[in-house]
Length: 128
Ligand SMILES: [Zn+2]
Image (cartoon, rainbow, N blue to C red):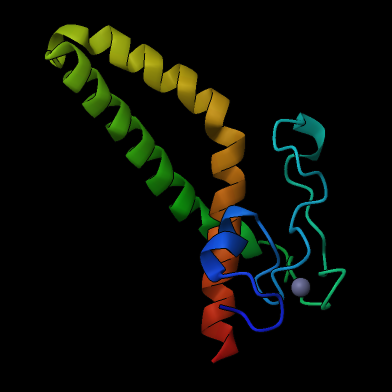
């Protein structure tokens, strides 16, 4: 638990809060599905002043998290189709269709959580 805010790291990540104080949101618009403001972040935390957007290109590495989460999502979909239908390769078009459709829908959420995880990872590294 963070003594300053009383919010655990997991809850801070889930709520997309500042990695330092876990009080202020990292993103300006809380709705990730508004296309224009999907990636707009606070440059500095309005509560503690922590530099959320550290430098140009800071979040390029977040693509690794994004990729891993998308692979996990699509693998989970394939497993769910297999568990429900009992067939995997007979439902190949269904799996591909579900994977593409759902990936488009959840991509703003994945985008944001990849940045949050990257930010928390580097805050933990830089803090020590
Ligand atoms: Zn803060």
